[in-house]
Amino acid sequence: MKRFNLKTLFTLTTLAMLAPSAFAIEFVVDGLRYSVNSDNTTVTVAGYSSMPSGDLTIPPSVTYSGTTYSVTTIGESAFANCHSLTSVTIPNSVTSIGNSAFGNCNGLTSVTIGNYVTSIGNHAFSNCKGLTSVTIPNSVTSIGDSALTYDSRNGCNAIIETASSTLIQGCMNTIIPNSVTSIGDRAFYVCTGLTSVTIPNSVT
Image 1: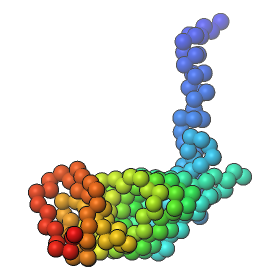
Image 2: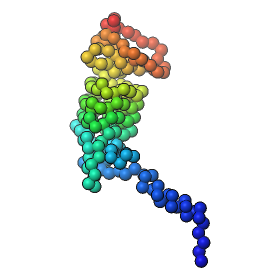
Image 3: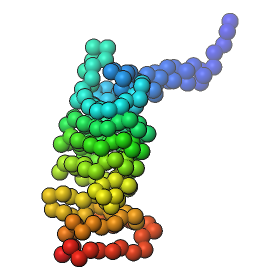
Image 4: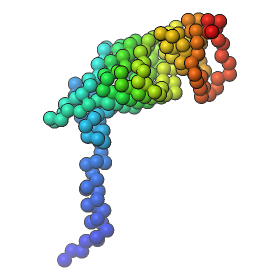
């Protein structure tokens, strides 16, 4: 008669029970790769099956195996280094854009961000040198470090609110253009390495 170690049996049973939740379910729809979130009702855009180019519109929801999921997150580095992307439209279903999500997409010229995004991660659009204008909705409560480094008007390397001509986020490489009339709260907060800032006479 074979003898079984109860501890081994318990461990194997536990692993079998945990296995379905230990690995995220991933699938591809229309060339984009999605990862199912822990709530099993929403998904993160994790990447792509073939590198996208031109205009990219991320859908608000996707259906896979008879289940429809809401698209709520653009994952970390999901579209990093997609040099042929020229524009991106992010739907209202999305609430967060991950770190480096569109980093180094140097062909990107236009980004439309949905009205319910609350956070934009570190380096999310960093080094998108062709990007000159981004409309950031009022829903955004946090913008990560270097989220738009090496972007913006005339290569000034800063985030400027067009309506009020206010510089709201700068960095150590920022050149404040003469069109800026005010500097927002904490605009240069945690700018490690910053040794000097030249403020033009236009700032009142």
